[in-house]
Each structure stands twice: as C-alpha cells, then as structure tokens.
Image 1 (cartoon, rainbow, N blue to C red):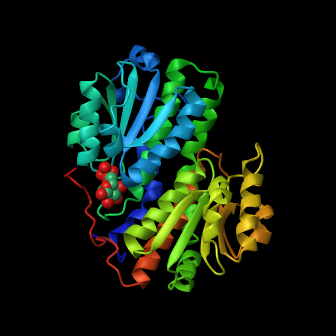
Image 2: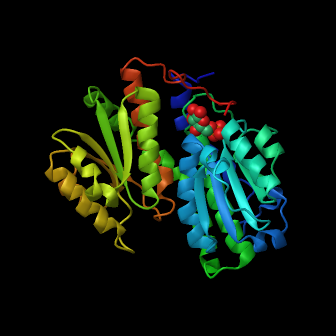
Length: 368
Ligand code: BG6
C-alpha cells in the first residue's frame, strides 16, 4: 500500500498535487466564485464576525500562521493564531461574533478539542478544518471545512498540512466574498492561482533528486536553521519542526528580520541555513530578506536557498538553490514547504530512523 515508496511519508509528499486538487474540487466555479455552503454558517453570521482566532497544535498551528497573513489581508478581520493548549488556559476574550477556527488533521487532538469546548462555552462560533470525517473536533464544531488529503499514515504531517493551507485560503476568500471587502475584485485571480497549484507542486517534486543529494551532503549536521519572512516565516518553522520530528537534530526557524536581534549569534562556519525567499517585486520583503542573507553568509553559513525561478538576486548568497515556481507571496508556502518535507524525509532515512513512526511521537495525541 506504499505504492513502491519506502515510507508512507514519502508517498504522501508525492500525493500532494492530487490532495490539493481534491481539496479545491467543487468549491469554486469557473468564474472564480467560491461555493462553501457546506460550512453551514449563514452569510449573516459570517458578516457579523469581528475577530478570528485560529487554534491548533504542531504542524496544523503553522498552517494557521500562514492563514493569518492571508485572512487579514483579504478580509481585514483581525485574526490571531494561538497554540490550543495556551489558548485554553489563558481566559481568551470571546464573544458571539468571534469565529474560532480549529485546525486538526486527525480531529482528535485533545488540546485542540479542549480549546473548542472552551470557546463554545463562551458562545463563540467554532469552525473546524479537518481531514477526518466524523471525528470529534468537527462533530463538536458549528461548522466544518473538510480537507481531502485522504488518510495520512506518516506521523509527521505533509499532505495534511498542505490541504490545511488550501482550506484556509478558501475560508479567507469565502469570507472576503461574503463580506464584499475591497479585495473583492481580486478573488477570482487568487482562485485561479489556487487552481494552478497542483502543477506547481509537481514541478517542485521534480527536484527531489537534488534535494536528496543535499541530504546526503548534510548527513552530519548537528543543527540546522531556517529563515523566512511574512508567509515564509511559518514555512521556516515547519521545515525546522520536520527535522526535529524525523531526524532528531536541533533545528530552529526564525523570522529573518529577527536575526539581528539575537539568533545571528548562532551563525558559525558551515552551519546549514535554509532561506525561504519571498517572491521579488511588489514590496520590500524580498530585498530585506536578501540583506539578511548577506549577513548570514558573511559569517560563513552554508546557504541553502529556496527562491523563485528567475530571481537572480539570490545567486551571490547561495551555496545551493532550489527554484520555486512563480507565486504570490501569500500562496508561496504551498510550493516552498515541499523541498523541506523531502529534505527531512531523506535525511532521516539516511540516518536510519523510522520515518513513519518517529520516536516518542504519536499520530494523534488524545491526552492533554
Ligand atoms: C502531533 C503530531 O502530535 O499533533 C503532529 O505528531 C501534528 O504531526 C499535531 O501536527 C497536530 O495533530 P492534528 O491531528 O490535530 O492536526
């Protein structure tokens, strides 16, 4: 059932183009209008929402961090993202007009479940983004958007994360559509970009062999850093989490702008540093990222750069470059996370670890 792959995880990474397509299926029409009536919240209820709190654990939390950038930009509704176990025990401010979005692949994570129970007791509306039909979290929520990743067996989430991103984008666009924000005219073009994502992910998967070669080179690394900005920051966090989970090495993700406020002290000769570079153009993000990379490179780090095709501004600061297909800043995480998943899977394989069942971890953690 692994279809010739050595691990479920690797199979699931390669299933992502299909998982994205399935998660988009039937949710928009050709004109770019979103159809998300399945969430079963009235348009009036959605128009009344004055705050969104996304809550989740692990990889799902990082999907939530990406979602914040997109949802706030598209809807102008204030959006917080909080780890479920922190949210639950801090007396968060919740009203009838707060929409709590719980993201969970399994739908059984106890920390996330306790968070939504608390939210509902405070009369907030709860919407679940979940991959498991009929599981506890969607059953206890007011509304649900199912991701259609198919069963995810590998403990470390890959296609689960990917389809969570898609569901979050759909939610943000749907809210923008229902509420008629000034972003309205652009919805169709984002939907169009979403529809093109499976092919883009396929394109990144085509570079698997180069990523595997890099893993071979970095087998002895004891520590790896990941840098990103904006929507690329959660991608950096996810890249680091995958290495901790699978390769059991120290890995950390940082917002690139935060470097000079501390983490740059960690940089030493030969330290592998992955850089997720935002698409060039539009704003200053890209140039700021490059200047951060310059600082890191100057201190002797080994630079592994993920940058858009044609972005030659990175060339001078890279030891290895993986090219990402053109994307908007908000949607870039979809393609950018793929090399990081492949890298962690391969490195752990080379180190002789059980990739599908890493030590000390469980697929769904049903205790708080
Ligand atoms: C952890 C898993 O325990 O739970 C992670 O090991 C996962 O891979 C996290 O991201 C959250 O799980 P879920 O099912 O709520 O998305």
